[in-house]
Image (cartoon, rainbow, N blue to C red; front, side, top):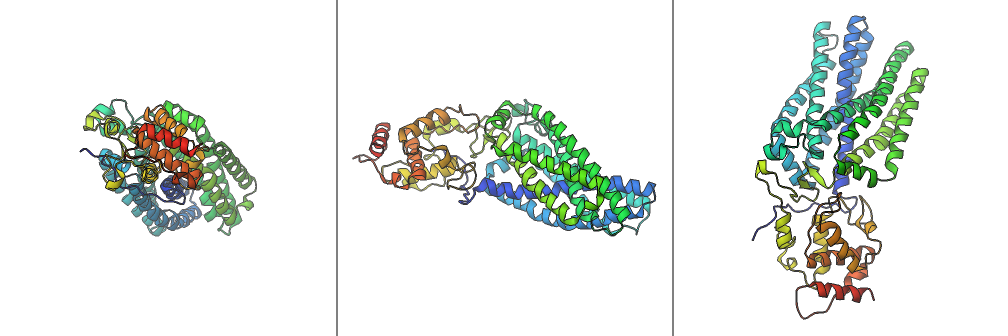
Length: 474
């Protein structure tokens, strides 16, 4: 018998595995983007300071770099492995697809990251200890290597949306998968955002300088950097939208939460007001205010942005051939990868899962709810919480969940056919659809799953499923 190569499902009952990954990733983006933006900003400031004989700006670079050692590099080095761990257990096949396609790209990124970490140490601890020309070279190398790490990661993130070139599926070249219109649009958008974050976080450091004249000068530089990058980000976002596949635009227009545009608009308005205020009145730049604005950007800017990016690539998790539930949903001839949908259509999920107790491979009146729970864990829990809390709780999508016939009809019509563009194609057998419907009924009414159809046989046939639905919904 053929089996699906699916790993055991990691399920976090509180908020769902997807939100655990999202929380860690969002915090990491705050650290990483601030570091990259600051590296480029340092190169500019170092050049300006050496040309205009401004040792005070070099001291600002030193203090900001020292702050980044903890804020970005220590905390970022914790959340970075946290992303690897959480994504590996939440989406093992998705991570496998990225590694197999971009292992050398990731190796390149790690090399540049090591240079970046060494560079920030040298920039901080060799300030005023080496000649100006050497210090300027260090700042430029630090800035370029830091930005290179972002370029590599953005190319991989772009592949998660869709491969750069349409012929990648047949040729599977690294550059064909890496470079595409979405790569550069996303890079431009993240570049704008990283400068905004650099300006916001830099205020925490600048506010602690006692010299009012120097504080005023740096506050205005940070304000102009923040205002300019925020405006550029809005303009680049329109370009980014033109590079998205039609399915992503469909999800964005119909499936994103109602609070998403309000959160982003509110964050942009708050950032604009904040930078205008510190531009006009630099004395308003205080460490506590800059820290508060950092949290505003994190909660109302970064979090919605990461949620949107994760949502609009559904139902895929990598390259539009690995579904979010880890099933291979498309042929990739260049890598001898075949879709697993035909196998599932032929044998069903329960017969092809490796890590499944034998007593659940055949749906019976006694195990229908438990078999349905396993199916929900395997096919749904990467995107939906099975509890009332967390990400997209399943119970919210089935308000009349005790109507088993209606649920079975939806599972066949909406999922088995693949007509629901933002959800994977899930070709349940009749017995599996009935089992999953039986479990979904318990999410609204725990007692509903207690009703079991009576039959002398063991297999739950479509006729038995219909009679059971009538028994549970007289």
